[in-house]
Length: 84
Image 1 (cartoon, helix red, strand yellow):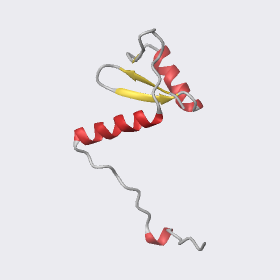
Image 2 (tube, rainbow, N blue to C red; image 1 turned 180 degrees about the horizontal axis):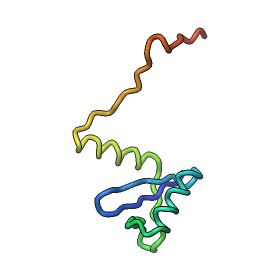
Image 3 (tube, rainbow, N blue to C red; image 1 turned 120 degrees about the horizontal axis):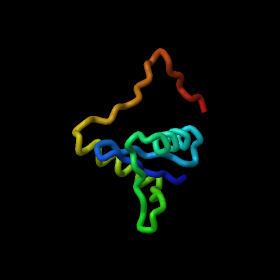
Image 4 (cartoon, one colour; image 1 turned 180 degrees about the vertical axis):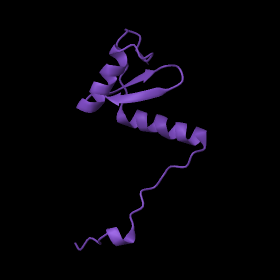
C-alpha cells in the first residue's frame, strides 16, 4: 500500500492510493483548487509513505494533542462468545 500526504498548511491528510474511494477523494482535493498541496520528494514526485509510518505519525499527533484514543466497546447484550 502506498499513501500520499496532502496539506494546506494547517491540516494534513493521508490518502491510500490503492483504495478507490480514497484515491477519488485525493484527486478531487488536488484538481479543484481547494488549497491543498501534495508533499513531494526531491524529484518532484508525490512522496510515498508506508502504512506503518502513517500510523506512527498519527499516534505521535494523538500523544501531542493529549487526546485519549477511543476504544470500541461492545455492549454485553450484543456480543457472543466464540465456541471454538
